[in-house]
Image 1 (cartoon, rainbow, N blue to C red):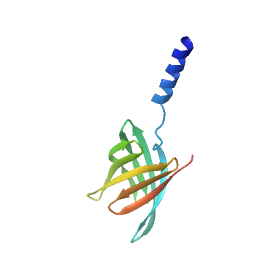
Image 2: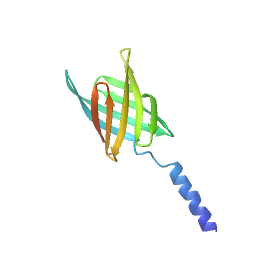
Image 3: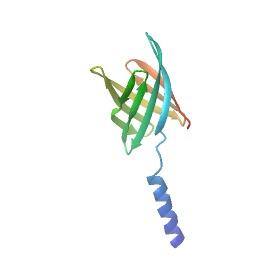
Image 4: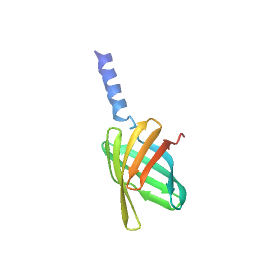
Length: 112
């Protein structure tokens, strides 16, 4: 009985502290009419909320209004008095695809 209770408590602790597969650092390249530039995202999931930051050669932009539903998520980024709404999906442990009105970007996990 003690063993069963201990095992259940350990399993519960592991589930509570398990990291969401979207968490982490991701990198991609965006093609634009002015050339390509690198995107570096840091995503953090807590419950059904997504936070983080987008880093580009132009600076850092916080992720706003982030929501997670399983492997799918949404968020917005705001800059220059403009807001861009994005959706994303974790397609594998090492690949995310994000979409917005400007197109689609594939992101790969940055291994540390």
